[in-house]
Image (cartoon, rainbow, N blue to C red; front, side):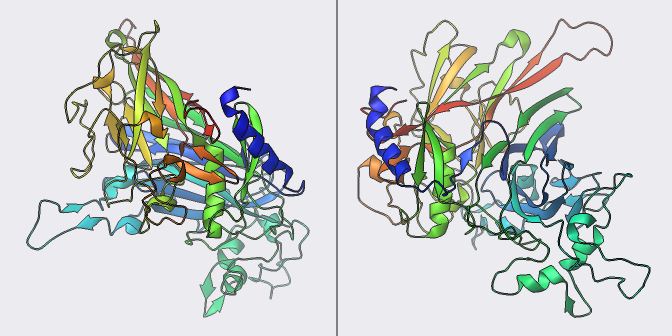
Length: 551
């Protein structure tokens, strides 16, 4: 154990001792399975397609929310309910539309509500339709950020909503019962695949969430009551977890592809939850990361020591407590990874940084810790400090002196948020930090270039989210999200969250580095010379009680 973290670990361990053994605590599962999965990136720009794969290797019948969010402000562009039987696998693709947006297509037979049509479902921009400012007469500050093109990049959330009871008597199957030749089945049996690979009857799930002839289906009727969920034929007690997933971003014209594993959060749901606590109707924005069925405690690794932090009572709103617990599992003070921009192999590297909870912090009237800026309709920028090291241990000797550094390409940051120093601005829920002169991932709408900072074409770098490493001034706010004059960074929303008797510093972030190469010596007709790979970010987290705000 490093001495600089000893005080914090002692405090956090004491917090652990105060939690009853029966109290669940969420954690980021390095083994890749959980109740919540986060796929940090999809892209349909410039010939990209993204393939999402989700598996249920457990013995339970699961109801799952599939939610697709655009990259700039995590606004929902599509969601639906998915029902997985034991050992089931669900796959879908996200691809471009002729209108310049994206759509979801699938050839999978697993049950969804609504059913996915054969030609797919186009993504929608309704949730960000207010992101514009149009004056009369027109002003230089006017903007319109409502284009369907925003749906070309983003990420995907998978949240387990509940578990069906295979022993339940049929309740939701009410169609055809007047015929003696038709036998009702329960929902668990309905979603189970037969020898032909097709579920027994997906239609009864659609009917359960529908209104026909003025009569509500069973689940829709239940959702109109105070519990807001469909409960019939679900287990009484929660029995979730075990989902895993992975994604592939492929560009056929370029002959490149890279894959990555979804981030898994295990024990995300409170131990007291029922098996249907989050089974909301399709089209509802719930469940989300503030849902009342989720836990307020998190297990976090500090210098290799697992400590449990309970946020219950630390924040004035229960939803905030649950979101901050999830933040703790994703918190990073520094991120490390490699970059390669060697022109001899036409190498390019992008770092993806996705903040899956950021929208909960930046869309109100004041920012909520640990984020410090509000969404303007175009951006919500957070500074970070880049430090690059070449492969011979040398660091950059100079950084740009210009007031506006000459990024290549120029970062797509609104004029009201220009970089003021050598900090790297991270302005979106999912931001790509571009190390080469061209984008590796083939996307530009959410990219910020850092090529001007690099003295060497190949090496590794650290992106620091710690207050002490950042030149920019971070806005201060308390845990209520109200403005404060407190200049103590440890008590501000400039990168700290209260965690019981201590604090964690940084931002909740997931992602990876994407590298692409071209082999110019590959010979022969039809030989592909393009290659790509993704490597997960390495990170550390700092807690209060350290002698310095460094990992």
